Amino acid sequence: MTPKREENLSLDIQDVADVKPALIPARSSEKDSSMMVSSTPHSSQLKYLSLGVLVLQTTSLVLTMRYSRTQKEDGSPYLASSAVVAAEVLKIFTCTFLVFQENKYSLRAMNLQLKEEILKKPVETMKLAVPAGIYTLQNNLLYVALSNLDAATYQVTYQLKILTTALFSVSMMGKRLGLYQWLSLLSLMAGVTLVQWPTDSTGEQKVLTAGSQLVGLVAVLTACMSSGFAGVYFEKILKETKQSVWVRNIQLGLFSLPLGLIGMMAYDGQSVRESGMFQGYNAITWTVVVLQAMGGLVVAVVIKYADNILKGFATSVSIIVSTLISYFLLNDFNPTGVFFLGATLVIAATFLYGYHGKPANSAVKV
Image 1 (cartoon, rainbow, N blue to C red):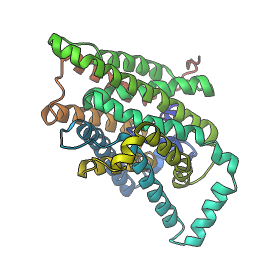
Image 2 (image 1 turned 90 degrees about the horizontal axis):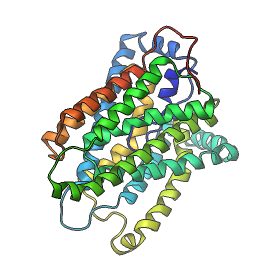
Image 3 (image 1 turned 120 degrees about the horizontal axis):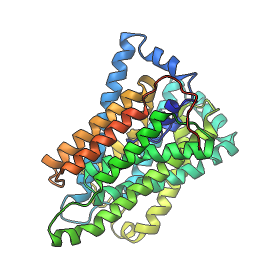
Image 4 (image 1 turned 90 degrees about the vertical axis):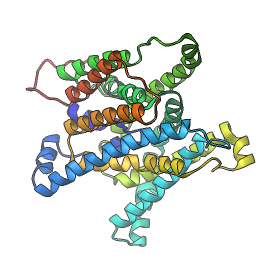
């Protein structure tokens, strides 16, 4: 498995939310995939269409989640833990329908497939309990992060998942990274450091926001760690299997849903009992739920039709669009020269990580 494939297995998300590119069945080789992508005009159209959808989904999710957590309305705000549960339910129903479609709308065939892949393989199914718990925690952390960080800062900082995925791949699976990959990781760390660099502001405002920004930063960094570990864990235990991506998402949901419900009752149980699970929900909230549930499915399509470099382009466009909208529409972000320098380094790192020069015998392994 090449470094390029490794990045595709990372939890991209762009992935916010429960994006699980590591769930995509392994292909014969990246070269064959590239040839397949560019083989026909129809495939080329699907490639750019899927990338456009990914940019739209990623940017929309980040911005709507940020807006939904900061808008001022009468009544209690919606519970982030309940939104995670609702997204999980929607994802399970969607994946079940897609399995139904794969089986040519035959209930008997679908039930037989689910029985064979889930009930008759309990050991393989139980292995998904660990990443399911990690993803549930991660999805809740992303709400915390976007409640305390502006969309632009969140988008850039969350790209550290590339670094954590690479490091876990090296330490857990003995993967080798080439020179370009290590250079991109250095650029990524420098860029994120600059984005988080403190700027001058009034003393009062700085005191009021420092604690909130720290909470957001800790949340997003923890999400990056969980993203990297979960992606590599999936690659390690599932790379030899050829299950349907939709079946794998259903397997994850069997653990993610009850874990999400336990978390919701543990942290927001009193509010749920008093005002119900869907308190504070409105059109924006349901939009966030739908976008979060669909995230992993969009990434699945992108990985099938596109390549790593174009995924990096989609990430970069999403960061730029989020920054512009955060500044002009949400009015919660004041860009500085240091931020733009850091964002440029992060965008460059996403491209550099997916670039492959001539194969080098001096690939670095630690």
